[in-house]
Length: 99
Image (tube, rainbow, N blue to C red; front, side, top):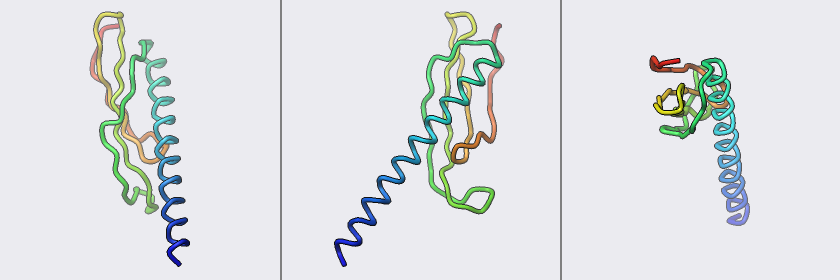
């Protein structure tokens, strides 16, 4: 019986790691798309908050907040925020910047 619980625990850890990577890759894609729309250079993307919970659709999932840095002139850096539920982008906060 203990062997079964060990396999279940290992499987759960592997699944959560895979899901976290999938969310991080989606955030990177959303940040690149946002930088392209703003006609700026994407510099970096980093996760600032991540938690497990019930999403707005009633299903369990990961709620994440990613900070991305971009530059419009190569000298100044600006920070934007991506708010996501699983791989779905919920909102983007971008500060005013020079074009």
